[in-house]
Image (cartoon, rainbow, N blue to C red; front, side):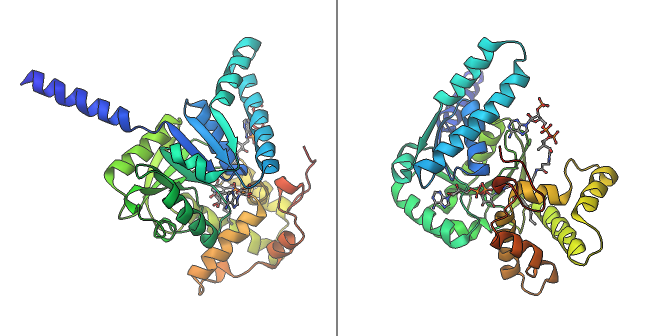
Length: 310
Ligand SMILES: CCCCCCC[C@H](O)CC(=O)SCCNC(=O)CCNC(=O)[C@H](O)C(C)(C)COP(=O)([O-])OP(=O)([O-])OC[C@H]1O[C@@H](n2cnc3c(N)ncnc32)[C@H](O)[C@@H]1OP(=O)([O-])[O-]
Ligand SMILES: NC(=O)c1ccc[n+]([C@@H]2O[C@H](COP(=O)([O-])OP(=O)(O)OC[C@H]3O[C@@H](n4cnc5c(N)ncnc54)[C@H](O)[C@@H]3O)[C@@H](O)[C@H]2O)c1
């Protein structure tokens, strides 16, 4: 009896180990994709980070190296050898590519972190579904699009879920793991275990608008924009108020610039399309003007605020 129990335990442990995610393709090497790839590589996964052009992935590689530099200086303050070893090990796990269809062929998990647009995401997953092996799990890092609407273009809804990371990925400790009704328990458990292997605290949420964090954060951020649009206060004063009065690390306008105003606009427009009667999500003239002028926040050097280009 004891022996049988031992065999069952040993077998289930090895099955879990056998299935665990080891190779990951991250698609989209912008703010989020580069952070996700970095953290996955730093935790021992073999990662391929893919984007549309070599120029874009080269830029992502530079930003990952900068982030690793900041991390090693903190992690090993007076140990140049340890700093170098950490950086070399992380970068050895990371491969940059512009060939998504080849990259996914050897992946246990594909994480999509491309532009916040349903049609573009669906087109990508349609291609991936034909190219990736049957066992490969798919996840989207979408901020606000229902996972079911993205997953429905594939024939592997049981292997599909949401992995919603937070910006900046190397520092933010939370990961929302989203399941649609078709997501199998095995897929959910593997996605959750992957998140924990990345050192994140995971929370589970159904596929509801904004999941947990953005369901609360997006209305708050949009209210801040409306407040300024009405002329009630300046962005600077709103930010000061929320940092000193509510204890937030960044005020809403600093955070909007940090997230990217293009992504912010995609989120608001998408929400408005799904909930057209809600006045909160009506187009914002200030936001639209900034996006039209390519003032997208930190990434372009100007948004609600001006930044020194790094
Ligand atoms: C309307 C719609 C809008 C909704 C948008 C939703 C978007 C999305 O779906 C959800 C989100 O992500 S929501 C967004 C969720 N995100 C938030 O809400 C973020 C809110 N902000 C924060 O939590 C803090 O301001 C930060 C943690 C970003 C920076 O901390 P800080 O104290 O203000 O500033 P600091 O002194 O500069 O940095 C401190 C230390 O961190 C280090 N470091 C920094 N970046 C690094 C990197 N990339 N790599 C490595 N290291 C990095 C840095 O070197 C320094 O190290 P030191 O050795 O101590 O000198
Ligand atoms: N910015 C944030 O704070 C944040 C936080 C959590 C989740 N998200 C979500 O993550 C996703 C990415 O956001 P981001 O801020 O990293 O955007 P970003 O604009 O910084 O990066 C997107 C990248 O995707 C690439 N891309 C677009 N279409 C592609 C395709 N078909 N194939 C390969 N690459 C493609 C672009 O070239 C770009 O490099 C979005 O769905 C967004 O809602 C963003």
